[in-house]
Length: 112
Image 1 (tube, rainbow, N blue to C red):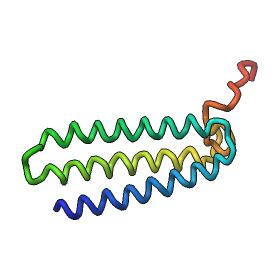
Image 2 (image 1 turned 90 degrees about the vertical axis):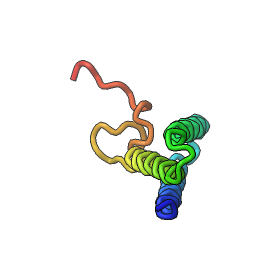
Image 3 (image 1 turned 180 degrees about the horizontal axis):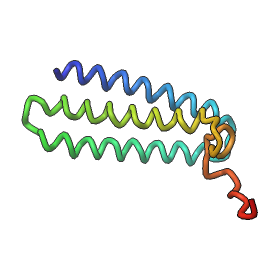
């Protein structure tokens, strides 16, 4: 059980790293590159602290590592999906170049 959860975490980590690489590649020389890296580092700290909290609820039990790995995998999968959505978004309403930075788009014209 713990081994399977560890493997799910490993594959979710690979998925997240792939999404991060695609996002960074799409960004190119974007001036917000540093901000993105800072936000990713903050997100990692948040993920780790959240999963530590869940882990400590089961501390001392044989299933504690299972819950920690499941938590980390779930966070990584959600983050990877979020990065892919913004990086490759081509729908109306996506801001920035192909949706990478939705807040960089100019505000809508109130006259329209």
